Image (cartoon, rainbow, N blue to C red; front, side, top):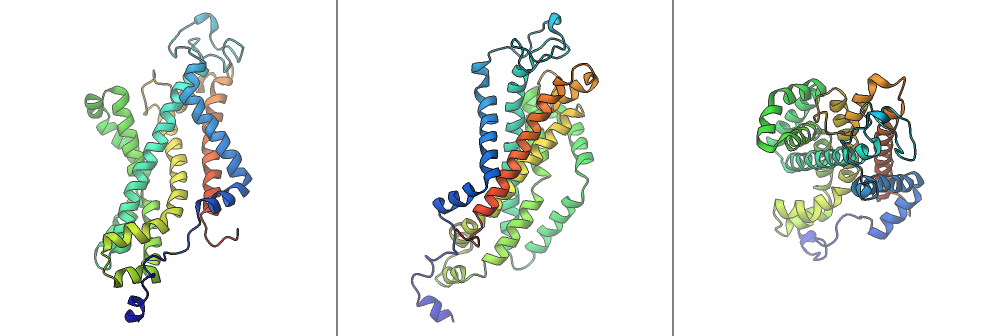
Length: 307
């Protein structure tokens, strides 16, 4: 069998079937909710990135004459209890909320891919040891652990990176460090399946080392499910940051993330429901859009689906 593998010079160049970019886009385009969600997410991202150019209002301008006003031409999203413009504060806070979501996703995905790849390629002791560590992290209660880590390290990180930078690094590290386990298990399962495929065996028979097998053959064919899992991690990170800010343990009060705006609005729901409605709607639309995009990517990257 080894001889027949070596006799086929094109075996190494014949990876598992994967959809081309055009086929992937065609499949994704058929998922109407995913396409609509992509448009909504793009509008939200462009709004928080460039919204300050179209609405150049300072987030800390106080106007007691405009306290708790509803939406109006002067304040499209209304004002808070200090008369501060909520649209300007949402634009500023949205940058932080989305940055935390995507940065924590990168941390969780990177750690998960490394752990899953090492476990999936190991044939002896590393696989059970890494999966034991993964199961251990999965069994930990995440919210109490988040609160404990924040309580222990918040002040130290603030001294090193500053108030805003320290909290950002801490939240990204904590959320990403506690969300890599599903990615690791997914990558491991993909590696265990792909490493026994014919094209990987052909590369191994031709002398390809483990690093070459992973980077050239296994990982490119496992990247589809990883991308789908990464979209879910963005949603989870945004919700986690909002939860921490709502509990008053995230960014300082003068940094208006969407979760912090919800926390500040909770005592004024009867007289100023708009204060909670707009940041809550932004979180809802962002998370829902990312989840639908993940569904669309799952269908688009599935090679078993018929074009």
